[in-house]
Image 1 (cartoon, rainbow, N blue to C red):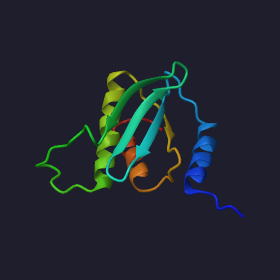
Image 2: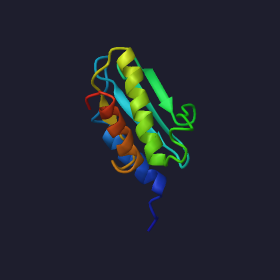
Image 3: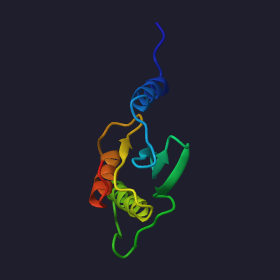
Image 4: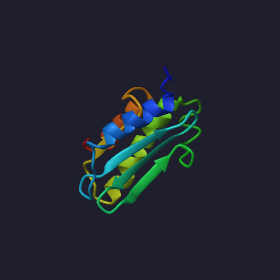
Length: 122
């Protein structure tokens, strides 16, 4: 018997979740990508196939004095808050959260908590 690779499992899980989620201009899809070091989040309009706004921990560095030793989960929450601020600037108050192939736990859940803290209804 051939063993199923981890990548194949993740891809199947992502496709299954994506088949039920569709964002539009009023309610875009928030897509999250998580690497070992950074986290990326973007608001996507699937009707026009464009990215409305995006934030990543690679580009966004919070005040070093305020968060001298912040954990990756705290950085993820700040990414959610920063994305919520950008979405408020372009008059978006609601969104659909797309966790991708990741479980809704840890850093992925922290991004969603940051979005809610920033005033976006998920």
